Length: 237
Image (cartoon, rainbow, N blue to C red; front, side, top):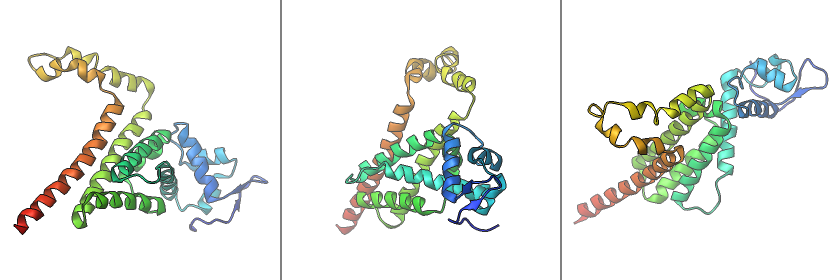
């Protein structure tokens, strides 16, 4: 199959034209409606009013389309980050933007939690995180490891949240209510800590979890910088 091209390809329906951008935008519209079939040619053909097979004139297969769409969502994340932030602010803004966009396009966010787009906006995200950990005081292998720690942790969390939105509402309701029902009914002798903290467990919010996770990542970077500086100072004595 030919590689994506910017040249419009005529569909079998008179007057309609397709471009890679038009196909990506159609996929995002479908994904934003919470649909899991944003990357099927049949669904895209319906959305575009075009012959589904025309999509393959621009994308080799479904996976290439997915990666291109995912990279476009990373562009949305990057556009949400204000200028002039310090390294902590940039990581917090990246985390906030990543979650917001993943929840906006849950099928994309959930799928890409374990993928890499290998495209320009992903490179920009990697550059942002590497720049942040370098500004914090890490370099070399330490910077690389802590970049992966931040990137993989954010992908895992936002992917989990996005995937959850794809479950049926009754499934989500059962899971969410378990903290105030089943967990309150466990055997106190067998599960003393759950029993003691049952009220607090039921009151935990997704926002609290997300904030704690992001701040823990930042703290881990700060602690590692402190340890490395202390070790370096000790070796010079």
